[in-house]
Image (cartoon, rainbow, N blue to C red; front, top):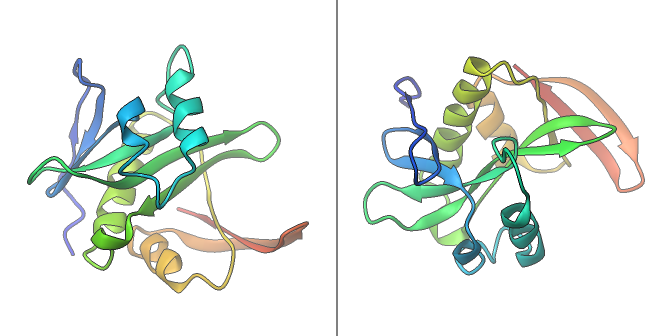
Amino acid sequence: MFLGRFMPVGDSDNWMACADRLRLRLLRADDVVPLRSVMEPGLVKAVVAQTGNRALTPWAVVLRDGGDVAGFCGFFVRPVKGTTMGYGIAPEYRGHGLATEAAAAVLDWAERNGVDFYASVRPPNPASVRVLEKVGMRLVDSYLDEDGQRDIYRR
């Protein structure tokens, strides 16, 4: 799988990164509908309503071919736990490597911008683990919280 050629973007349409088959941009209010199967509408609205720099928020995964919003990938800043990377691809777009391509583009952006983050997975979630491993992240820790086990991955 090709994970190499990412182009930095920063134009007026709020594009954050590009990869071969997709582009990533800041969320917009009209993303509520295409993201409804992978992100709570209230979260989309809250992210869009944030003022200031929204670089460390989830980004829309937009297909280059056709412009459909296929999911999200980006960051969640948690005051106590730090910055995590998360992603979700709508069911109709799964199984084509889009989560891996989006995660690789986000990782590239984070490295170029000095963002320290981790990813966490609540087992069992083999698809998410495969995405993280394909982009070079490895299991570094596990812990139990009020919801059960959480596995931590870093690059």
